[in-house]
Amino acid sequence: MPERILVVEDEKTIAELIAEALKRRGYRVEAVHDGDGGLYAVETTLPDLVILDVMLPGMDGWEVCRRIRENPATKGIPVLMLTARRDERDLLAGFDVGADDYMKKPFSVNELAARVKSLLRRRSPGETDEKVIVIGPLAVDTEKGEALLKGSILDLTATEFLLLEVLASSRGSVVSRDTLLARVWGYSAADTRTVDMHVFRLRRKIEEDPENPKLLQTVRGRGFRLQEEGAADENS
Image (tube, rainbow, N blue to C red; front, side):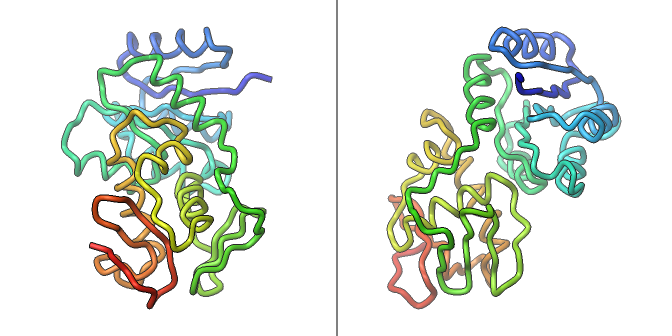
């Protein structure tokens, strides 16, 4: 059965453009033009993916995304946010409420379709046969799709878990931003700030002091690595 995609976009021309492009690729698409209606559609139809504009009448896209993540029935649905904003703080706000990816307007419908396909695919990017990867106080259960910190289950989005899994499967080794884009998001020609923002969010969930990370380290000019506290580091 074709995957169902919900488009929440107040500009009807853009919504129709997105819907037509995705229908041609075999998806079932529904469009809603305001935030309150979008949230209601998510909760009642449980789509496979939501394309969500930031600026909406009534409830804005950030609030819609936050409520999607708070609801146990919808929290696992991938959310791709659309924004005309250019300020990095606005982009970070989308990731703070749990967005999996974002695109700036104007955008290519071909790139949009590629990102939709990647988010829906969601195959495990790990290259390890280990069922549970333990790194210091972290335990990443690749079979159950959950991570624990000091025995407590972490509240991670699907993208955050995949990012953590890729880094854990390469524990102690540096993973470049381009590699993370390819293995977590499924594409390479994109703004690597997507990676940086998700790393920022992930640190806030796994580090005692996110400003001075001990587990998830930045290696200047190379990328990121996940390693036990106390191991030699080159982090910034």
